[in-house]
Image (cartoon, rainbow, N blue to C red; front, top):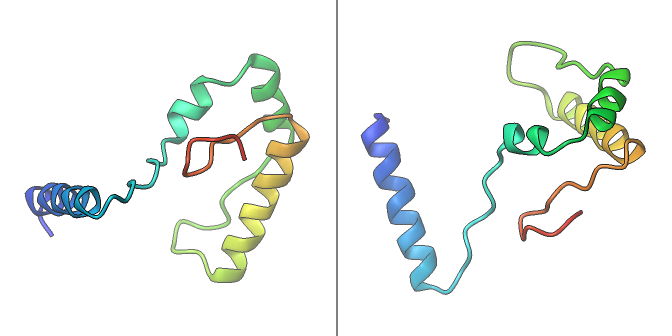
Length: 89
């Protein structure tokens, strides 16, 4: 799919969701979340040393394990992560 086709698809999906009264999911922007962290929270996360296991598509088990590690680190560092509805989760 070309970049133009992807943009058109996103546009069409937003219009269809709007017509049905549905809200689009919140964008996943890790950079925005990272910029909102305090120095102490960033230091805490770096102590957990979470790394992605491979530069390939993760297996379902690898993905579950990685997400579990991330959730544990975020929780132990006192970080509220917005859910799709924009509320801390």
